[in-house]
Image: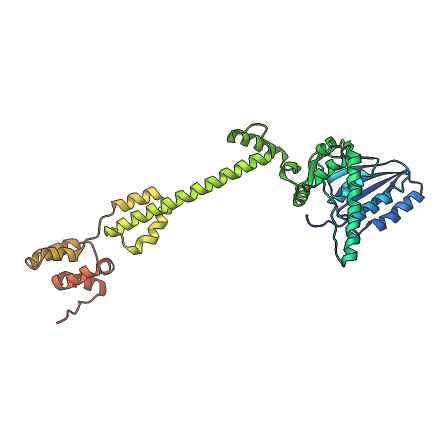
Length: 375
């Protein structure tokens, strides 16, 4: 159930008729209750009021308090009519059954179920409470059957399945009420719709909020066409289809993201193995791939591998020291000391022993002084 709304009962004189309002949870422990209401009705009757018109907007509540409300209303000797607001549920439906005429709005959410009550105490108390609940259940079952023209067995079969929800028009068609109120308000505000939904009203019985009705109807029609669904598809079916498609799309997006992640890793692994990049570059290039995959891929593919001075020197061997020096000079022609230290420290070590002149030039440019070679 939704958060309880305090019970508000009012009875105001309107000529020889009393305008009565029953709003909120029907319970004796709220701010107003049936016993207090009885005193108000008695005062109106004493003043000559004979008829009454009752407005009900209630999520239900205590079956005993609902019965006391009916007893209070029956003090009016004339005709007692009524109409339902957004919610006529549970014990509130019993009040409507006992009026001479009771109508609903098209936006009314009507719900009845088998009476419920708390049974507690010792065995004598439990048996007494259980007997009371059985008596109330029988009374409700008989009242629903009499109003609708259904058999009591049919009522039993209906409420044995739990809460039974009806729109205003459906409640009229099933005979629970006498007709529809001809009013101008065919839509409810969003807060009221949320209150009804919180009571457990299924989506296909829930009235639409005024601010969303027109757009929602247009959206549902459009979605039926997009999804290739028949015009008879309900809003709930369309929404369920949309949710299924969204979940499938989310799975595809996640799979594609994983594939792209693996592809980026493969490209960077290859570039590092080919000495185009170092491991220190990985994080920054991963970010660049995320921002612009194709451009970054082309950039990485266009990079030249860093020279491996140690390999070049080793390949030259000791046979041609001058050739090794020339290869080293060519490799380092646009690289400074900091680059060698970061990207090819082994090559820098080889240079220090095989090409002291070149090493000295780099060292002096970086540190501002000549290196001291070991003896």
